[in-house]
Length: 332
Image (cartoon, rainbow, N blue to C red):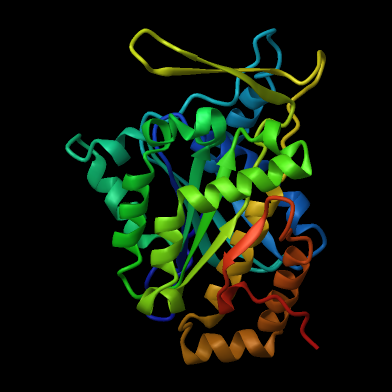
């Protein structure tokens, strides 16, 4: 694919970066999101076209996800990536040249917790350039035994510090808090509310800091639980002799297949923010006028509306901190 350029010849790229510790489910979430692209966009005049290598890699992940329910002892997702990986998409109107590139970055969780290892500088670069950050949260670790293993598994202190370093740079950002492996709790309204309350409590230091001073005006935050496998549910927690936790999962009932739920919600919120950020960026006078004349701005406004109209704000979902770039109104 030919790279899309901005008004001054720079790369026109909007970045989404996964953030989370080892084994929390970042790669599984990314693959599940990719599978939902077509369903979320629907008939809106919006196109997300994957680069060839991206398409091949993510389709391979999806194939693997469809096999995680094939065994008696079901898995909760994919093995994590062993290296930093970038997945590229071109975004525009259907049947027209792309307007900008959308780059998803995934990385081994070890880079978050071990800054001294080779390659961790790529993690810092990915975070600094991120427009949208998806915070992957291991739900059983957060919820079971009153969150006894939350710090050990999710490393919330490191995650929060990473985000606060990032948001010191003056640019609009969206933080998506995404509890994963949450099928057990999302099965009932009470469970979903309990999960939302626990996330708010556990990440209160982050939410409070995002809501103050200059950071408040440039940062949005949304809570979007994702049932990344759907048919697999957490059953019990064991402790090794070392004290490390082992989380066990099983199929909800025999014969069920991979059936993710609510992956679209995370994608809907992300696209709302991403498209609006493109529209408000400095595209240069000529490009801005041309895109207005040919109806691109109008089409993007309506695309945001179509994508956003099914966003959920209850039942475990919440806009924790609003922002103008999350606005969605049909153009007149």
